[in-house]
Length: 219
Image 1 (cartoon, rainbow, N blue to C red):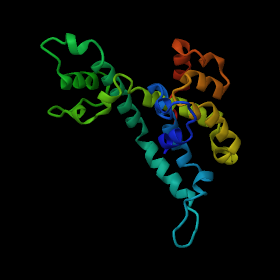
Image 2 (cartoon, rainbow, N blue to C red):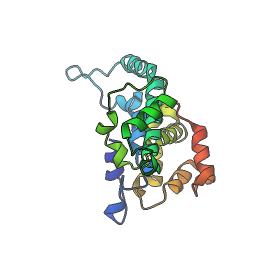
Image 3 (tube, one colour):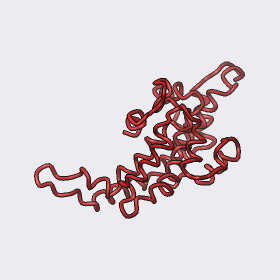
Image 4 (cartoon, helix red, strand yellow):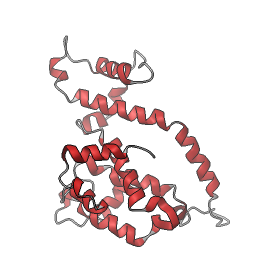
């Protein structure tokens, strides 16, 4: 849904830079941000109703579901970190310099054995079925990167959904005008800087990356 809205609300002069056709570092932001809206009470109240009685979805059911999801969040976050590290390894000089020739399964095992909580099982090759390791070409970290940004945007722009902020037209217009409508026609760091009113982010670079790192992945 986030990707669809990104494209629908695009207002670029050229289609080739509309919507998700932007820097990969920011392509997942609308999609990840949408996950916050998907569990917001004010948003759910707009459509989540019983098909016969029109009774609204009891939010306690949503709260229980979120609690179950959060139990395994640490494992999922670690998995994403490991995939990002594996992606970096595959797109490093390693394929050309690995003694004995490149072995993608051994690289996976080395990464998971060294940095993971659980040793990677042998006689498996999960990387062969995960196309993102090819499509993202060294930028798979953008999923975690955009989770950090989405959490910041959710809190700063949409006030964490408090008092119906998730369905505020003014806040939504702000996100549309500073991020969504630009696609790849304006630098993503500038979009983020304008949205959050933080000039330190405007030019990107090491300082801006460090700032996003300080926000962390909390949701």
